Amino acid sequence: MASPATTQTVRPLDGLRLDTSGPPELTGLVAQHLRLLGARTEPMSAESADARTARITLTGNGYLPHEAQVTWAAAPVSGVVDEATVQAATGVMAVHGRRDGEPRGLAVDYAATATAVLTVQGLLAGLVGQSRGGPAARVATSADRAGLLAVSQYLAAAGADEGEAAEIAPGGPPFTAADGLLFELETLDPGAWAAFWRALDAPAEAVRAGWRPFQFRYATACAPFPQDLHAITRAHPWKHIQQAASASGAEVCPLRTLAQRAAEHDGAAPWSLTPRRAGHRPQAAHPAAERPLTGLTVLEAGRRIQAPLAAHLLGLLGATVIRIEPPGGDPLRGMPPACAGVSARWLALNRGKQAVEVDIKAPSGRRRLREMAAEADVFLHNWALGKAAQLGLDTDDLTAVNPALVYAYTSGWSDRLPGAPMGTDFMVQARTGIGEAVRPADEAPAPSLMTLLDVLGGLLGTEAVLAGLLLRERTGQGVRVDSSLLGAADVLTAPALRRAAAGAGARRPAGFRRPLPTADGWIAPADACATAARAYDLRDLSTDEAVTQLREHGLTATAVTTDLADLHHDPRFAGSIGRDAHGAPAVPDPWSFA
Image (cartoon, rainbow, N blue to C red; front, top):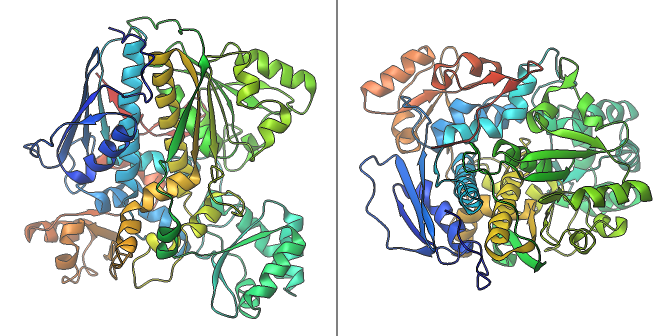
């Protein structure tokens, strides 16, 4: 039964009641986001009988109840019971640890955070579907599937027909200036890269050898460039390094602390929804539609990860996604390694989409895009700030031809930090204190070379679009939605920022989520068992024997996945990981609906 449009609605969940039960690690962020979207919190229920299962229910205002069930693992799996063991099993520890040459746990609750956002997505999608004539939905999510989604590009590359374009070996930023300041370097231009290092008198051969691993660090999660480059920056004070960056066109950013980020944090929500003028009521979906967004059309003009991932998830929820590509097609289709001639990483984000080549630099191309937007439900992009207005493709331009459009912009900074550097994953990590947050107190701060924020930013972009679609259904108005990598950083580091703001130790203790070596691999204890597990010497035992020994002492642990190609045959994910039409590995949908 569809909910009637209500002009009094300001937020998409106004008038709905929220009830939660289960462990706060799985319910807290879900409830927070649903409250931000307008849900009214009921008194918290007692924890569910199964302390590892969370339940979230939305009811009221003409909607049938929508329920979400959240678990650590999609299937009963011994040993995968919390954040640490999910990171270990899904390959997150392996990818994050490539810079160090061995698996490392993220000191932030990345899998739980991603799971919470996916859960909100599932609830919003179900409400959109019901608003359009579909049935009430019950959605199930799990942290292990969220972890697999987070590593899906790396998994796709591991199962490709060819090897990586750059070596996977220890190494990478940040760099250190002579006065001890840690900093991140960013440029997408090989000329700017070379000019920066020439200004610091770096050896020409080291500069040439360093570009390729630096360029592909987004893809490989490591950057084994020559140590001469690190030595060069340690010989120059920060002022000289800034001057070299300014003269070359490269950008540098000091690693900020969590305390610094906490002091300037504006408390903004991770996205914003701005209703536009009244539009038409979209046609209802067929009540028998299997997926809640069936019948909706998304135009995506995205690049790299953030916007393409957001559109990919909307497609998995049933929308028809039409990808706007430049003449000649997206050059990232050729990014190695390939499966059947197509980039495995590109497929991980773009399989199943339609593609239309449009030259948005030409008046005829922009006119064509506006014509397509007139028939679409969502227009989604992550262009550089100001580019849409410059092209005549901003919110006002497209809502003029389609007043009911949900116009979605996934950016780096949401224009919230004046003077911010380039809005790429690693620069946002550097600027927001993530270098401290992801590593325990006994390790030097260093942003992760896993694309943490691009992925989480894409997830938040999907959440924002779904909130916009629901608001449109309830009000009949088009909506502008904005999300950002900055918002993703603040969501991920929120617990650490609260500790920093209170004057407590913001970083996790020494050794936190550090896997334990065995004779043939690594194991990761559950967080609650880690201190006790470190008392055992497991180095002469096989991984299976080590897990068994700890279990006999009442301690929970699981094997650390070190080669993502092994996930295909891992009994913890039996039947979950398939292959697409090109032969590229494909992770399971992160939600299931019933």
